[in-house]
Image 1 (cartoon, rainbow, N blue to C red):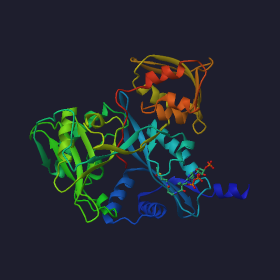
Image 2 (spheres, helix red, strand yellow):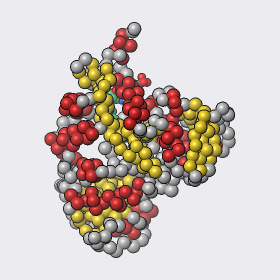
Image 3 (cartoon, rainbow, N blue to C red):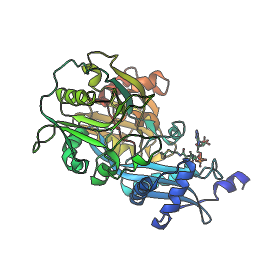
Image 4 (cartoon, protein in one colour):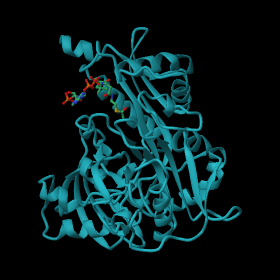
Length: 419
Ligand SMILES: CC(=O)SCCNC(=O)CCNC(=O)[C@H](O)C(C)(C)COP(=O)(O)OP(=O)(O)OC[C@H]1O[C@@H](n2cnc3c(N)ncnc32)[C@H](O)[C@@H]1OP(=O)(O)O
């Protein structure tokens, strides 16, 4: 055995028991260079206790860890259980010995045991996860509205009243509207009360612990009279103007049942006194606001980036569970070095009635890696873009176009949340 091999086998993978969750968070905070306050720590502790936890132990020392939240992801035409990978940390003294690689192998076993055909993550460094079969599957864009003047829109806003509600009541009030988006956009997570409380609404104030925040408490505005299902809502915080900075409205989430409902909410956010900028960190790249705006200089996309990275862990289950926009019948030669059960030649027969994925002997129409299939799975990454980049090989002319047409969704997938 070489010295390298010895180092690689020095750690032992096992469950992180509840009693080690404190240690695990210390490891995480040390590698991410964080010093969070008590509220954030309590929030992370709650998340970690509920997560699937893989520890890499070097003797008694916790040298590495990975967690995965047990979540459900919307996919075209349905929902699937997904392992949402988080807390990935390896001590600086143990890095580059293959610990992350071995934790990922363990993760695939846990996904199979837990019935999770998908895994996903938000990448701190995008260069790391492609090697494990993750592909960027949803994008988000940052939007900034110049609110120093009334927001000019091309249609009349919904005229129903807007009202601020107590954020503590928001999970029950907003859930039906949010849940309705799951069928419209792939890439979104179902939420229980705890995800609403800690994530979207930050009711315990954990995100307020973050340094240099300066924003006030979370506010929730809904469209529509009390006693009626909201036609839309926005979750936001405000920060007053300082000597050298404008007053800002920072929007966490906005959902609306129609374009006029969205217009009413955006107009409201852009009209809050003593603020002159509306910032949104995460909107779908096909956000109707970009078309509604009468003046695109007033509503600017200030950035666009990959959001959710997805990995098809069980390709057959994933492909046969989603809906398909057009009929397709192709043989795919799929590479998957980490999960050989997925690899090989398969015939994909899919259409509006469903899909099958069966081993095939025929010559392939397309060759690709599971990373590329994972990227395209939710309908957000056109396969033809990956083919143009030389990452998908087309053996039969037209095969890329046919698979692209079948994968397409009406709206782009969107995730937004990042926890
Ligand atoms: C979903 C999330 O939680 S994202 C957060 C990821 N965590 C962090 O960034 C925290 C700080 N960093 C760390 O804790 C560690 O360095 C980790 C987790 C990124 C990597 O752990 P290691 O045990 O060192 O990784 P390991 O030795 O298994 O390397 C796996 C492969 O990834 C590569 N790799 C590791 N880190 C990086 C990086 N930052 N950028 C590019 N490649 C990387 C290695 O070179 C190796 O490549 P190879 O298979 O071609 O040889």
